[in-house]
Image 1 (cartoon, rainbow, N blue to C red):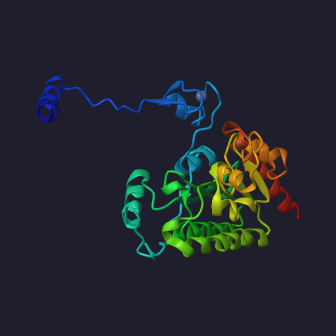
Image 2 (cartoon, rainbow, N blue to C red):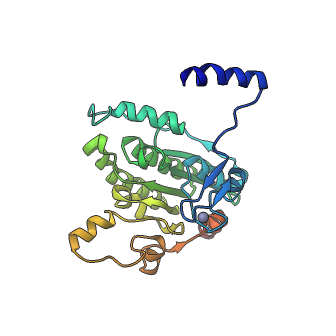
Length: 286
Ligand SMILES: [Zn+2]
């Protein structure tokens, strides 16, 4: 077999001069199972054109979709202490970090950038669930503090896209310390009289939902996003009750007054631009 695959196949390929065809041209919708061509999916901002299912997006996607003409300037984030606990489970934490960095081409689970949104200066911090489940360690905390400082410096609104499974267990108590730290970061923006807008995306759970993710002046969520602290099964086992339909989903939280609005991805950027426009217009008047 190895002779066939390693020797004969490459030979045939060079003879035919055929290029490798990437096998990721088609994506299957996890909700309706329909196949979607990759360019069509990209044009629809990773929303299924058949059933409207919102697939997970990366931090890079968020930045490109949010700023005017997809143009923005990313800021370098302060480096956090790598692997403070020398943590190891099945794998070393340093190995996990390296894998995640190779996979996502990001340093950690957060990116921060500034640019204009609807013509108004704005700072955006976006999380990637791809990067170790979007878990919040010291690097994410650093990112949020840097984003808040930048927003204050530029007198610009701060928009945060959350996508996280919670705290990063490989950093133990240090990851938990990022909860109060991120809360202080959001407080800095508010104390400067600037809007702090949170867009909750699928999924936002654990320590992230228990800190900066729920403190927005305006709380927006994408349709169908899972938002909660503990998992539904854990809650069910603890309270020994069947949980209602749609529990911990964006629409349920909206119906119960936890969030302000559920906005489809296609409408999100215009909505953010309007909100940012309102807030800055009011500021100018004041
Ligand atoms: Zn679908």
